[in-house]
Image 1: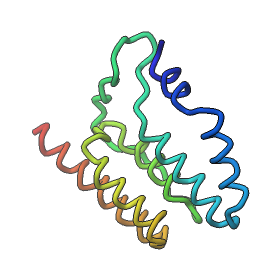
Image 2: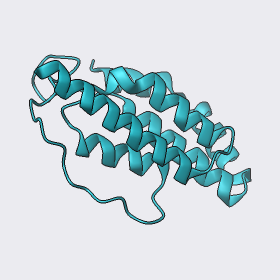
Image 3: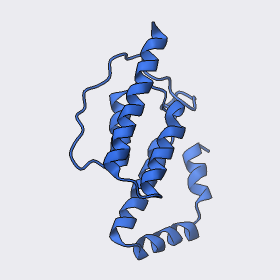
Length: 136
């Protein structure tokens, strides 16, 4: 049984119903935040490469970051996804603690998304610079 099937098995129908009921009771803004947080958790879950038998695929050896402009009104979750695509050479697990802290500040503490995204961009850029320096 693969890890996805095991995770699905662990979530009971009661859990799913409870989550749906909570989502229905929340005001729209909080419901959107809950969904963003779920997307964040989903995005940070590393899926094995198809047929590789490995838990984590090797990061690409690309040295130059991509050029993906920051769209207006971007959510924190989408910013994390954009930055992960912009910097595919980075090991996201090394940034997990800092990224999770920033996401939590936004979702739980209500910190402004623009500020959090600004810090995420600095975080990814800083890790990229360390990555490049380690290759010299």
